[in-house]
Length: 161
Image (cartoon, rainbow, N blue to C red; front, top):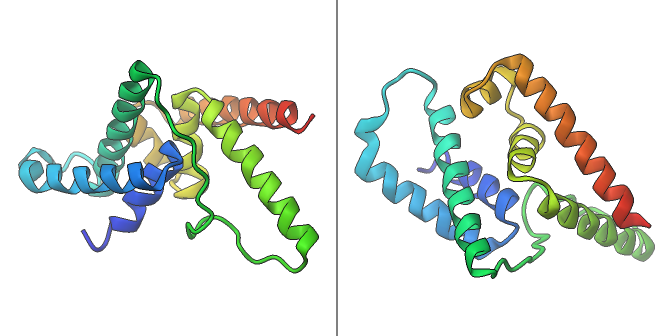
């Protein structure tokens, strides 16, 4: 748990954009692991298996929220992957605006696109690790990542107008 707790939380936060939900998912994942560790079959790396569990739990929570039409969007700039070092008040405001646009764009992406972007860009998974997590070929990972980046770029451009 100590080795993976930050990874699990960051993935969950990246997918859910809510610190409380991310903490709940992380806790749920580790409880599930404690009870079901025997299901790990050593066919892949443990981290790959864990990433898949976390992303599935996040998608399940998002689906539940969509069915209830309650998906609170919170921006938490205290996470370690969010840049905090700014030099001037102007750059602080600009950074906050950019962060808000990025969060809105990520929240608007399809779940598949959001998941692959978070795993690649924020968790720095290799293409091979992504292929294992997503259950597809490396070529498909590359094309999905390209599609996700294009979709994100388009959403950011729309939000900046």
